[in-house]
Length: 500
Ligand code: KIV
Ligand code: ZN
Image (cartoon, rainbow, N blue to C red; front, side, top):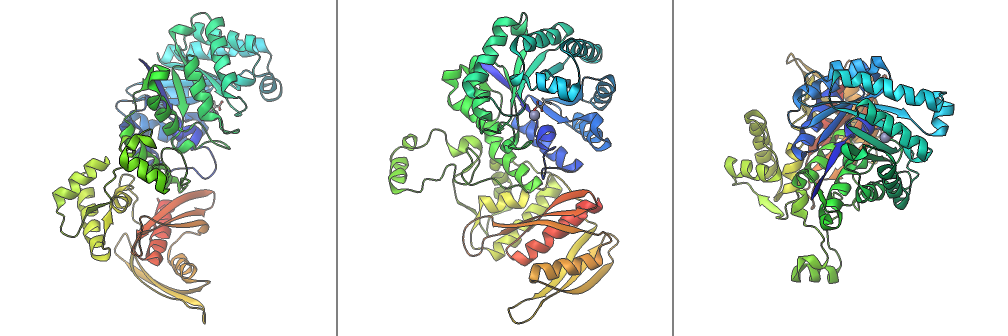
């Protein structure tokens, strides 16, 4: 069986799309989880694009020990030098260079002739190969390129030393049969292509990104570029979990599989969703809340009699456990730690102490503590946020006969306490107004979402807010059985990130 490489671009193509930005600590936490997922390549960013991107490529390169770490570049020396510098600490650094090859992009965007594009490919790839052995070339808008010219561009990249050539469907225009044909065409018309990795990078504008990636694999592509939960520009990129599970479930058909540890899929998906505050639709394949739920009587009966009647893969294979009531008031620290390990969390001593204390607290408030509750408690322990402000106390009054009022007491990093009172249009607004009077930053609430982590009247309420100050927007998260408290904690979490 062949091994299809998974090139994850969540932290580059995904992160650059609106509403998906992450701070440095969050990117590192996601990169570590991608490593646990065992992706082959993590595209950490576009080093030249901003000092922040440079810093995150560098930090991820230093942190990641097993996967290759890539940084994106235009076909220019100063970009390549920046990536080389940022990737110095990586165990397996990769320079990724892109240049458009379609007539539209060459004429209107690049204002370059075919000859100039070929020359630029040769020049930039050859230069990158003098710095590092692992160089990838992407022919941007490859699918809409003239095929014979695309073949020349791919050949130029291979001759100049590229070890991977990527064929993107940048605008998500292809249909699966066409994408497969394009890969077959290149395999037949480019000498030396079988000695390198052929990669594909499909966008989802027509909902075909996963189908196009799979058709390319069937035609001979050996690397797929994708993102967790399919995030990315416009309608997103091919979703990693769908590509991986489709290849795995139909591995006999593809005669191929990936290196991914599929048991880490659910956890990775949740971590990303919480980090960026973008929820996963319930019917999303593989990771949606309903992906393994059997509601109709006929289906339930079939699954109980024999799972395979309606299940083509098990929930356990993507990291979901099926025991609902897992731990309770009398569970000890060992049972808690073992359970976390089963869910894929290996916390350090301090994080475990905090999580265990929170778990015990929760047991006093909730009759049943499920895996979803525990997962919600620990899932963001990995990206630490400096607590510039901590909630000490709050009192909120609201009703339909008077304006809501909130009184909030916060403690700052020096242990100094500050209290404020405010009116608002409802309890959350009043609480947020009071917080705004205390903190030294002018914040705007961009969005507010609340959801129940598990079922029942005593479910934990998780609030996710987007808060901005100037041109910076962050995601804040709060968790409590009291939804006003979750709302306040989410806002303070966002403010702490802004202050950090
Ligand atoms: O969509 C695209 O073409 C890209 C390239 C930079 C690989 O993201
Ligand atoms: Zn892209």
